[in-house]
Image 1: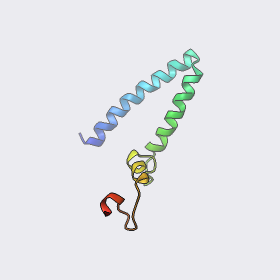
Image 2: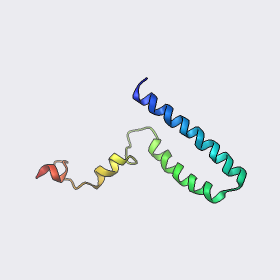
Image 3: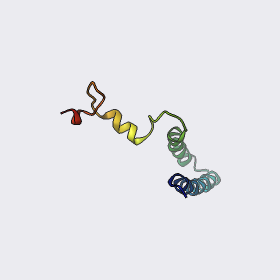
Length: 79
């Protein structure tokens, strides 16, 4: 099994668990907790959307915070 398929399998198992938790929170009328989960899940949707846009990934966020020189290399490497 490839790494991607293995990681997908793990994520899929966790998503099923989250789905059960959401159903149970609905049954309990736990609207505040559902709102909190909704916010977190919406952020994950952005990160999980397939495409060339990597803005939501942690690697892209770290790279965006690094100072860049004119050649596009990090400032630490340029010195």
